Amino acid sequence: MVKSLAFGYIRLQRNTPANELADLRQQMADVVADQGFILSDVFVESKDSTSSAFARLMDALHASGVTIVAIPSMSHLAHMGSVSAAMKERIESETDARVLIIESATCDSRESDTFVASTEGNGDV
Image (cartoon, rainbow, N blue to C red; front, side):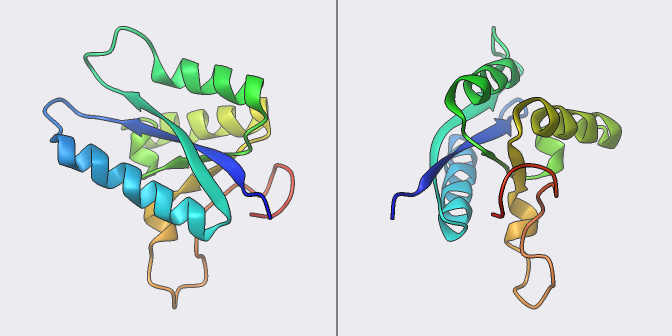
């Protein structure tokens, strides 16, 4: 069986240690693999970037047909909850991709929700 690809998106704070970025990438790769996907590109937003990783993510979603975007937590989309929710909604409504929130996916297996994803979109994850 061929696994489908997933993208990742990370927003870094200033002075984020390099090992933290590597750890986040690995966590995302592990969780998407558990869900039957392979983590492809990870779009990294940082205060020092000259271009928008979010815009590149949206362009890649439109061009590729990838249907899963993994994020470590909602705060990686934005620090304000309403802005994070709006960005998640934009991803899901404009691209038909579903957002997989890693912090929710790694919760205790006794909890009923093993991951958070929109109920909109195509197919089950």
